[in-house]
Image (cartoon, rainbow, N blue to C red; front, side, top):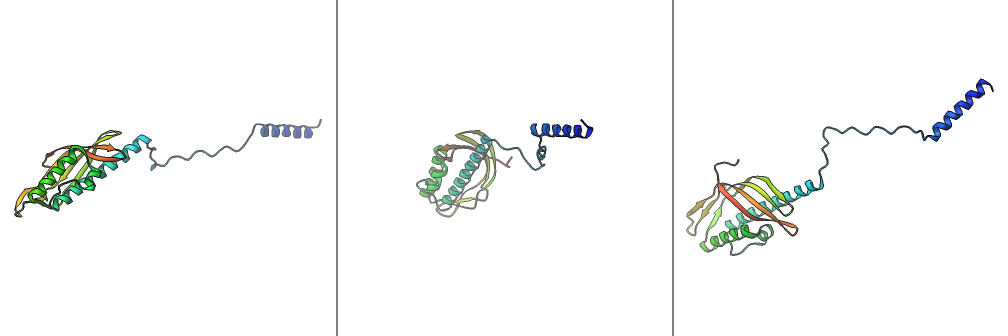
Length: 181
């Protein structure tokens, strides 16, 4: 056998060996994460986020509806918006307040501002919102259009409960403060 023929045989054997071993070009390296990428949130974290957003929306909607009805002179019963966003003792307390407004011919002027809402405790069917409400620009007038009362700055710990597919403000405990913390 000549050297040329032996070289061709050796080259053929190497080629067959490479083909048999499945030699392919290596895959490109995975892309390196950029600094702006964040870890994927878990399903539980996503659900908590959605629940807090829904609870905060119910709280804000209820507070706005209470303000609207108090400016209009009260009501003898809960409005549809109030029942959709609150329940339990919280709804009962505000219905009683609005009933007293109606019976005494009181009304509010001015707007309450929700200064802050912080997330507190959480479970699948109840959560806590820590809030600060500024109603210092609200003035309550009596039937003779005399000042009956003025608003205040207050913090409140509000429990919001899941009722079916909705979150409703259920109960709260507040106190007058000099500043929101």
